[in-house]
Image (tube, rainbow, N blue to C red; front, side):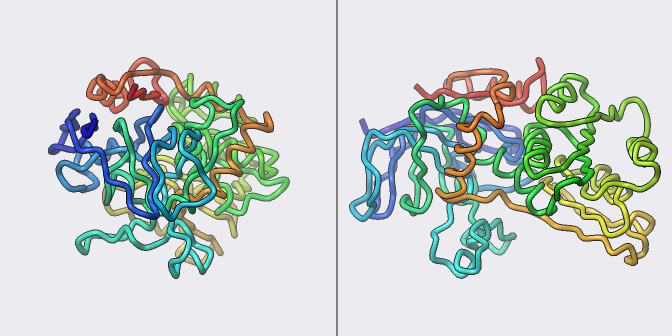
Length: 358
C-alpha cells in the first residue's frame, strides 16, 4: 500500500478528504499509523483562512497512534508501540531548545509571514488528520502511551492539555491565588484544571454556555460567571470585593476577552494569554492603567516534546484529572467534512471530536 486518506486544506471554507502518498521515512523520522486524532480550534482558523497554510496541506496536530516504521537513526523505540507526539515538535538541538524554550524551536517561520515556533504538523508539514503521519525528530518527540490508558484519555495531551496547563504555568499561579479563566472551551477547561493543580484556591470560570460551566466545576472551578447574565468584569470585581484576581487567563482569542482579563486584574496581576488571535488586538488605556499598574502580560505556545507528553500522561495516570468528559463525539476519518461542520458551528454540545482513521 502506497496511498492513504488525508484531510487537506483546499481553499477558504473547504477542507476535504483526499488520497495522498504515504510519506517516506528519513533516518530521524518515524511513521505513525494514526489511531485517533481530533479537530482543534486552530484548525477552524485554517478552515476559515484566518490562518494561512499551503493548499493541499494535510491538517491536524493532535496524534495518537502506533509506530509503523522507524528511521534508521531512531533509538529507544520499537515498531508496534503506542505513542503520542506533541503538536509542537522541537528538534532538541536548536538555539531555542538549548535556551529552554522548546516550543519556540523557530522552524515554523513560513514565507516571511510569522514564526509559530515548533508548530509544524498541519502548519508547515503534513499533519495527522490522516491514516499515517510522519513525525520528524522522532527521538525528541515520541512518547510511549501506558498500556492502561485509552486513546481518548491521552488525546488532549498533544495540544489542548499542554496549552491549557501552559496558561497557568506562564501566569505563575501560586498556592492561594484567585484565578479567572475566560472561556471554557477545551483549552479554557484545561487551564482551569491546571490552575487547580498549581494551587489556586479560588478559580472563577467565565463562559456563556451553562453546560461548559458545569464541566468547568468538575475541572476545578470554585465559582462560575455566566456572561449572558451581565458584565463579567463587574461580577468578578464584586465577587472579589474590588480586589481583582491574581491571574486572568484568556482562552478564546478575542479583543473582548483580552480586555476583560486586563480589567479584572489586581494591581501587579498577570494576564496569561492563550488565544490564537485572527486580527490585531489593542491594549485599552483604562484596563492597562496607562501602563502604571505593574501588570504582566504573557503569552504561551503549547509546549511539546516527549518529556512534556510523559508528564501530562502521568497526570492522567495518577487519577488527579479525568478529561474523558471533553471527548463528546466520535467520527470516522471518512466523515471529516461533517465533523468540521459539527465542530466549527459548535452544535450538539460538542467539545472535542475523536476522529478514527481506521
